Image 1 (tube, rainbow, N blue to C red):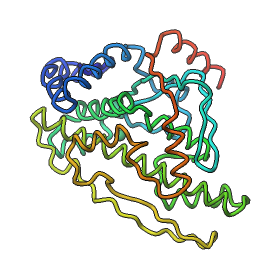
Image 2 (tube, rainbow, N blue to C red; image 1 turned 90 degrees about the horizontal axis):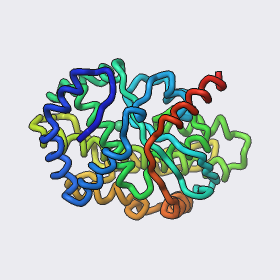
Image 3 (cartoon, rainbow, N blue to C red; image 1 turned 90 degrees about the vertical axis):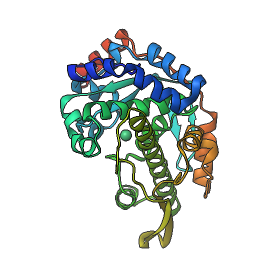
Length: 311
Ligand SMILES: [Zn+2]
């Protein structure tokens, strides 16, 4: 069901032991059609070469800060992709966006959040693996995987670390783009705030899925999923003589898991734009053609070479 090729023997044992329960949990969550698709994709897209070491990780993630952080991760690698972003929020992809899913699990990653999982009665290694697989699940089932676009957008904005609070995003954009015309700075801010809101919608939804799966497995994850309702706060920026409404909290608060899933899977349709930057971003997102292929040994060798030459 959920595959893991790594050094944590105990986790391998747990996955084997809970295979049927995990299948049932995802079947219950997704329904027969999507479940079959999920299973087929795990089968076809995830192989031993999809699991990365910390040395290789730097080669496939764009942001150094992401690469050095010890958390376990679901990763998306790309093949010859070019995405051109504009400050008005629109972007264009030359051809199809060909991506390969991958995972990074390691001992420090398993221990990093162990208290959070233990506190709500979930074995930390299993909990962390399920969380990363739920990111993979959204990547599979979103016609336009948001995480992939986020990385390109962050690269365009040259945001140095992620995630960022809206206040830090603001500080960064004002100092980095301070010489640009005010409208250009404002555009970048709006884009930054929007991808941040989408990032949290995505992350929070993954945790809602985690909670559902944990419960199906018989755990009682009290306090694991606990996000306030979405609110919009006003951020005043004297440098631009302007105020910006920024969203925080759970945009799907109160929805059951099926309705939440439906919305987060089709996010370019469900998010209602509140300015032209958002409108452009969502419109562009609806036009991208994503292809998902498995990571191959050849790609992995190429990557190793690339890492060698980068140093
Ligand atoms: Zn996550």
